Amino acid sequence: MDKNKICEALYVLPENVVVRHRKSLVVPIVLLLVGVAALVLNNVFAAQLSNNLRSSLMFMGALIAIFGLVMTLVRMFGNSSEPYHRPSKCALQYEELYFDHKLWRDVVECVNGGDVARLRSMTHSQVPAVAVAMYTTPNGAFAAVQAFEYAELEYRPLSELKVVNS
Image (cartoon, rainbow, N blue to C red; front, side):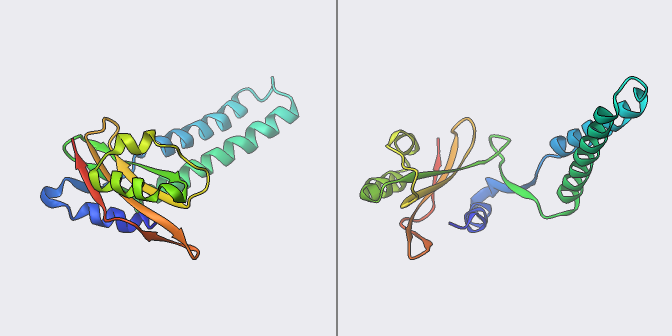
């Protein structure tokens, strides 16, 4: 399963229903601010804190701040995008469902019929003999699903990409 190929197929849908969208900067900036706040608190309350607590606060604050800074820079200047469903005004969520190999016909039938609810209600497996990759909106208004079979150390498509609009 190549998520990039599925995303590329979604981006060429008619009327630009799904477009590339830059990932949110909220989480990386919050991490950066939490790390900086920990470093500031370490300096403000230096007299009241023990040496071990100061060292821990300095280490964790610096680690979180650096991680937040790197994530922010990657999201700002890197190629981190996600599929975005324009009519619903939300990012598509990726999900993989795994099934036993004996259910492959039922899985392919559900995918070709666009029955996402039935796919979710079927018995799932921990072993990805048959896998379904799906991008869905949180409200269920849009879904793109494709079934794959794991054979000879690779995933082979069992179905075409099926787009379901509710």
